[in-house]
Image (cartoon, rainbow, N blue to C red; front, top):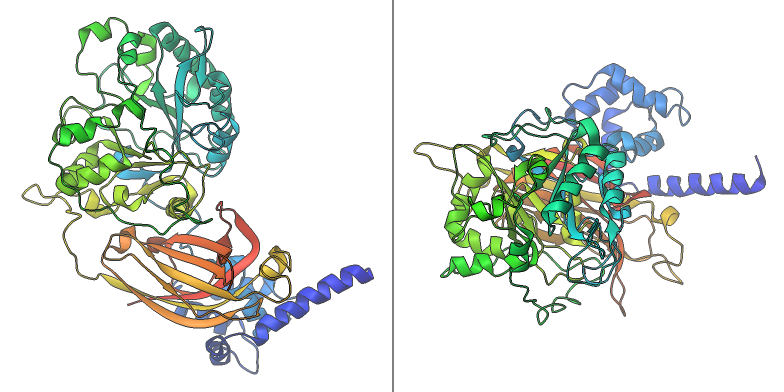
Length: 586
């Protein structure tokens, strides 16, 4: 071993021993309780797993496997250092399961689906490049819904993907389709939905149909001629690609759509967020005195009207294009009330902007829940989010919206919640909705998101300590002359009654902060609650520095003392940074 390698190894060993010496008293007491003469054997470790970690099915063989992994520290069992290293290891993560474990044979409408918005954009909504690269990145992260905006190219003889009426540079549709085929099932075997916003003539629609069938071949799912009475299940659509768009209409009709822009509003919200995003808010109380006007106010920007039997339009459609559509999209004529009517003979997708949804839930909350039991609701960012920021996804999820579409190229607290939600169910991109959003009680009653509920359970969180910044950050990253001053923020994102953030004390000059603080979170709807964790470094003269974050669905959270990996602003996991925490329910 070279002198340099020896120094690195010695430094790591010394730093980890330093963490052991700073272990909270509760950890040391538990080790003393479950060890004998300073050693925890397999039988005693099994008791610890059952009684403290609440792993009721833990076996002595499983415990011996943990000991064998750490035998290089102590041959006969776990000493305090090995025990502490196990607690901080990837063998002790907070998730119940890292594989798919939800029931996957229900209709698509029974799942929250990981959904992207303007998936081809590399940056802001006005002037960034369009590319297949962000599509690849989204699919590799498990996103299951990719949105493409289709426009004629300059010569009107081919199809480009771009954000219309902006300065974004186009990318060829065929390049995007090939990218989707290549990377669709890298992270998940479950179906990829391509939502198309179509601004094409019938001849170009036919060209799109040819491209899609030639590119995807037998993995492209095409429904029969009859309207679907129920959506297929994710299990039945494994490794398939499905298309969702409005039924094709005459191109000239689209040209007659109002093209007024909201330029005066664009940019108003720029600067409202810090480097990691402003705190999340729930919807304000909004009146819906003129719901038809509310429905129409943003239609020209993004979305579509439902084909309501316009025979003139049907004469100009491309039949081969229409045959590709599995999930028919659009809005019925009329106001919000018409939007949420349920047709027992067919299912469809409805798209609303975040603003339209906020207005709709003020009056039609139960109707939205009922609609989403059979049909699909997609929510998309308002047009003024030109910086590719996002919104609070809980408003949509609380009302059963399956496709809460996000700008995946951005970052910030809203996107952290989205990433957290879809860490559930093995990260497959489909999360089964809670039963209360799917059931109808007599007499034909559904869940009412406005009703104040009693507390179902309380989550107790202990933040013991953190470790890893010393290895993952430059030693002058937080402060040029002294170790960092870390504090942690812990809280819940969920329904309004459950949403809260709390903060530990700030510990000065310490790369291995030991907070040892407890917090309690009463939960009325634990099924929709996400545990939020952030670490920041206090800076007296400037904005506090970012030190890591994660979000974990409470439904996926294991009891016991767990190692919680932190992620950067983009949601990428740090190699070493973790918190040691304890989770208890009562």
